[in-house]
Image 1 (cartoon, rainbow, N blue to C red):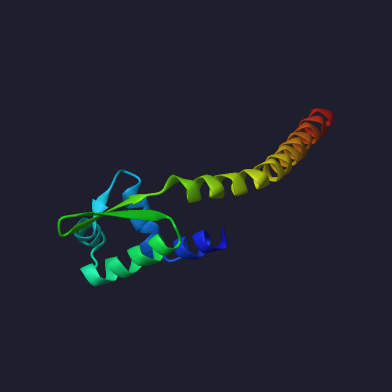
Image 2 (cartoon, rainbow, N blue to C red):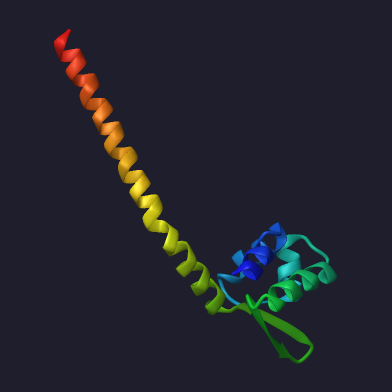
Length: 111
């Protein structure tokens, strides 16, 4: 998990992941879309690959990268463990705001 988050913390790598959501791309396509030089894109892709987020397929002299699902499933599972906490807090906030609105309406009715 830590490796995944560290890899995604760098903006260019996060943009690469966002690009790859739509499907596999070559290093050149990624570099062009992000306005990077190919060596820069390759460096970021190497980090993503080492983190297990992408896999590469060699086709002739081209390298085609695509996302791997497993690390994102792990991330989703980890986030899910916090979702119930946030839902409870939002529910309590909603109850509190509704209580304030009722008190305001009651106060206005008495005047």
